[in-house]
Structures are given as structure tokens and as C-alpha cells.
Length: 239
Image 1 (cartoon, rainbow, N blue to C red):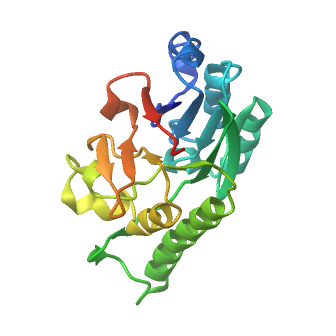
Image 2 (image 1 turned 45 degrees about the vertical axis):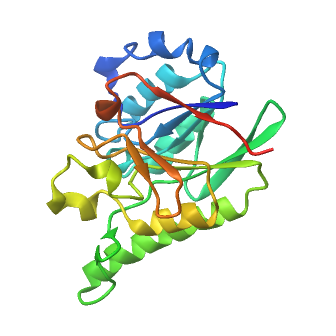
């Protein structure tokens, strides 16, 4: 059994220093890894990122993260990623990491993702350059996820994003903002790689459980949805 702890959208800043660590110091007893699904900060400042690092460093289990839109707000996403990496937190953006759990290779591939919408109700790269740039970024991040997943030599694959790959986990959010909460291109990458699990955040008023068209479990781990510090998901590898 592989146990995956996950949470997103913790939105930490210096005022919240020390609030999460007392809960997470025992996470190693509950899970084999901790995955963070973006929006780790409020406004993407380095002071906020230092708080994130202090909360999640040296927990006794691997910590893997993607960044979210809040973490990009101050245009310091590269510096934030570097700071977290220096504190032992692996930050993925079109990359992957392989962990070993009870002799099994567990591959985690991650991207922030982006909006764009879902099959039949999505934007297209047509018209104004601003619209083309929006959709081009969506498809580019999905392709990055696809490449990262495809490159994994692993027994189990997990996709970690901030934006959602499906609409099911957005239920509770206003329909009008679905195109800004995720993209079906992410789900296509997840299905093509035959992932065991896909995790995302971003949709604070959404629903925890969903499934891709190909049958992959999707979980919205935004903390306001979980109503808990984190959730633990079990994966039973195929023999």
C-alpha cells in the first residue's frame, strides 16, 4: 500500500508561521510522501515562501510541490521554487521525481497547469493575440505534464497540478468561472499516462472527488475543501 498525503491552497504568510507544522510533524506516521498542490503563499513573496519552507521542511518524509497562481503573483516564482528546494522541498514544473515505497517506484509529475475550460466548453487559440496566448499557455503546460509523465520509469504514476483536469471537482464553484479553474488537456495527459491518482487544488468551493474520462481518480485537495490539514489517499499497486 502506498499512502499519499496531500493538501493545497494553504496560503501561508508570516502571520501564520507555526500554525501547520504541529500537525505535519507526525505526517510521516500516516503517509509515505506529502504532495503540495500549489497556492502555498498568499501573494507570492519571499517572506511568505520562507514561512512555507519553515512549515514543511524536514518532516521525515519526501515533500513534493507545484506552485499555484498566488505563488506567481509577485513574479518571484523562480526564487520561491529555489528557496523551497534549498529547504528540501522538491518543486516540479514540467518535471518529475521518482520515490521508492516498499520496493515500488512511485513517479510524481507536476505542473501548475492553467485555465481554458473543458471539452465542448473551452477556449480556442483564435482571434486576438491575448486569447491565443491564454490557450497556448494552457496547451503548453498540459504538454509539459504529458512529457513528464511519459518519461517516468515507475510502477505507479501520480499527476500533481494546481488547476483542475476535470469539472467534477469544481462542483460548487460558479459555472461562469470554470474556464479559469482548469483544462481538459490536463486530463488527457493523465489518462494517456494511466496514472493511479491525480491531485489538484485551486477550487476552494469545489468538491473533493472526481474522475477523468479514462477512469483515473481525481482529488481536489484545496484545504478549504478538505476541512482538514491534509488528506491521505491509498494506492494499491498492481502486481
